[in-house]
Length: 325
Image 1 (tube, rainbow, N blue to C red):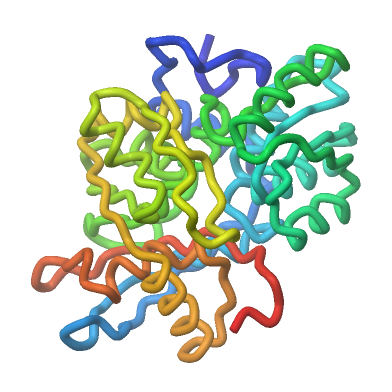
Image 2: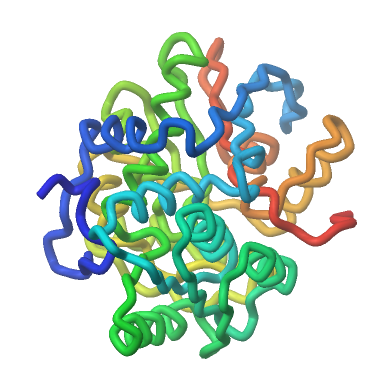
């Protein structure tokens, strides 16, 4: 079966995960026509450690629901078996918001399992879209296990927040937009989290453009997996609550990162916070911490573009407390 059309209940935890290819991303784009925003790109310069750095900012935080994850959520639900009327997902925040919004649009019931530490702002957003929210455990992994069990108990579809072909293919539609919006083949920087975003970008772009994964230094899920040759649980690193994310890269993301040679760079919480403050101060743009991680790599000097290269920086989410500073 075409990976982008795999039923949402299918597991991706096998040793050989399904491959997500550019053809799947193109199919997702056709499916998502009229369902998501084509978010704009803003060409500008930002302060770097050694002076101004030209960048192209992909304003994906302007997506419906304030998160890129809506693309994957809608794609997965549209690809679900006919008659699907209830979906269950585990989430630390944005995936729950995206699935709740997608389910509401498609007249499906939605249950989100969140860890006890899930940010209240994000839980409130799930409620606003009509989702049932249940708390379970102290980590995403515990919430994910409970979501899998609950889906069976309620005969509902289980949607994975990031390690699922249709979700990855949906995220990859960002890359197809970038090909139309930005000339040449500049590198694309994006935050890692569980890996759904970089996996989608990698699946769509292949070797056409370099994709660089930016992760928090206290949860180096991609770099740890690349070093070990397999996904490994890095454990909770004690970072800021809003940076709560998976502690192990998804199988699909690992396969794509390995195949496409996607590097991983780590940034500190302080650098991410400084990047978010800069976006507000200079551009009056409000993003969440994870949404500013890719920019933090440029501004802190962790990522230094080659001479004459204007990297694309994906600002991927805006679900945060207000005021943010």
